[in-house]
Length: 164
Image (cartoon, rainbow, N blue to C red; front, side):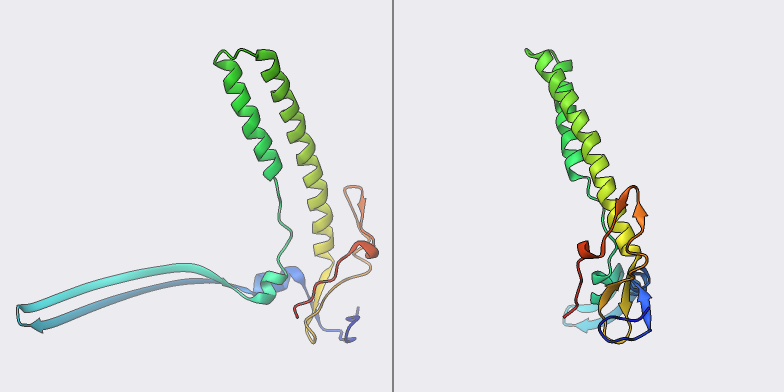
């Protein structure tokens, strides 16, 4: 499968480009010092540790899809607050119960919707390639049409990504 921009046969999957572009950084340093001044001799000792990671721009562009459950967490928080309100002797226990039921249904619906979106995005990500000559992202036309939990991904729905 050749790149449609430059016809190069050299490509890497987006997941490999993502993993290759992340570096783990760990460093330790120590210092000792001796000084002589008007008030006498001074001795200093110090040290530091650094940890972190570094990621290339290409690796950031090739990042996998992220899960987003913010709405479900928000609704869960509201449901917990209203449950606590009903348990503490609220003046409107029926209203609190209705809110808790609606939030529970909303949590279930938003979770299912996000799971379908994430599965479709993961299928698209699995078909994404990076050309080693020109650096363009493109999709494998055969893998782009795969079925993921009932969702068919069509080539017209795919968005191209450019690093320029």
